[in-house]
Length: 396
Image 1 (cartoon, rainbow, N blue to C red):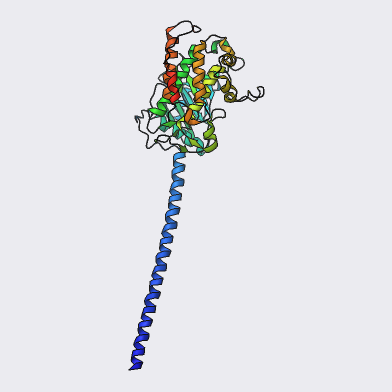
Image 2: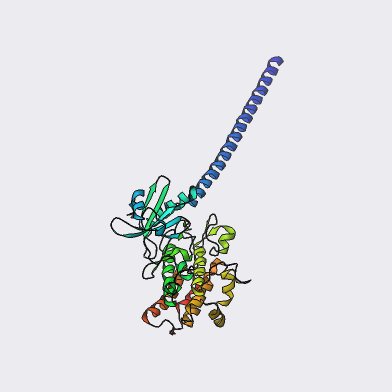
């Protein structure tokens, strides 16, 4: 009897041991499976994030809420070859980051500007796609109009409306051998260009959702028609901004030396205020006639922003930094106001820079006054509640 009872006791012990071991095995499998799922999920998230960053850096425009009527003409390479006289050197009117720009005439007699991509590889492809996708969606009288394109294997070309007076840079810094008198911009024309370029950025920042950040705003990317009306061009580096107030997007630092905002250069954090800084540099060019970076100048004068900023709020020093090509033909009151706008735009802290809407509001009365007078050098009188005062808001 005892043997039987002992046998049953051992049997129960063995059963308990088997159950415990089986439970431990199941638990181990569950832990292993959970760890596998965790690792897989982590790797998947990292891969998706890398894909998302790469996709964003190529300029994902899927969330862009604007008019999407493309209306772009697709050209053959043969058509554009014919339009430019076989891409004759005599028809070259400029050279940008994308490639050479040619003057052309289409079969219907319309004058156009044709960009021929000379940058092979992924970056060139990305800039081509960005320009086509973006400009097919954005429509403003202050942005250069894209008429069509050609994508023939490795040949990538963009066809734009023709701007008879080329880039602003050409008129601020005439090349040797050109007729500088015919290229000189008077004060009233400079004000008009400043306003129309500001309206171009205002459209990108505040009339598009999410906002579009140009990322390469500079004097050579402001083109002028036969009446010197200005349009913003070259959107190959443009990027969609954050649709959150005060938000930013992180991306590679691209742009042109002297125009890149300091916080973007240091951190890669890009906002619409990065464009505002670049706009401020262009205002300084219009005021001084100096390039953003010129290390051939005396010590302390090589970087335009560093040299000009302390002088922009001093009446006597403002006159000293003005472009000699203007020959004093400007209103000091207007110069002081434009200098104040420029000073706020190039503030080192992005939050202290104004919105482009505030800049536009401040420039409108100056341009209206110049249009209503025939003598550019005469001095206007302004009310105390000038729109310039609103710039102090500098809201984000």
